[in-house]
Length: 149
Image 1: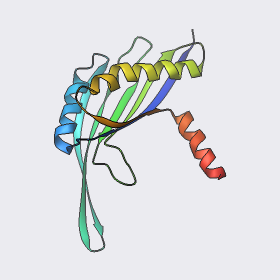
Image 2: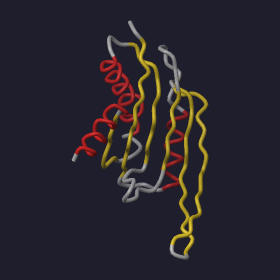
Image 3: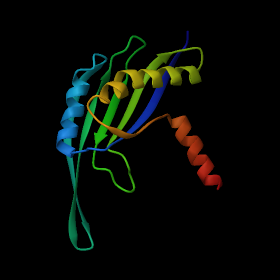
C-alpha cells in the first residue's frame, strides 16, 4: 500500500483556560502519549508597543517527534489566550506518514488517529467549547472560496 504524508491542523478552545496551568496540563499529557518522543515546552514572550503602551503577549510552544510504524514526522503545538483574531487556546500541527489506498483515505486515517490519540484523551482534562481538525487541503479550499466571494 502507498505511503502518504499527512498534515493536520487542530484548533481547540476551552471554557476554563489558564495559560500556565493549561499549558502544563497539555505538556504532561503529551509527554505520556506513547507515539510521541522528545516532547519539549518553551515559554515565548513578545513585548509590543501599541499607542504608546507596552503590550505583553505570552504563550507556550510544544514540540516533538511522532513515532508511528509508517514513519514518524513531527508535531508542534501552541498554547495561548484566545483572541478575536485567533479564537482558540491550543493549535497543533501534526505531520505524519500514513499508509492508505489514496491521499483522501490517508487523511481520514490520520484524522481518526489524532482524534483517538490526542483529542479524546484530552477531553478528560479540558472542557472544549470547540474542536476543529483540518488539513491544508481543506484550508486551501476555504481560502479559495473566500477569494472568489
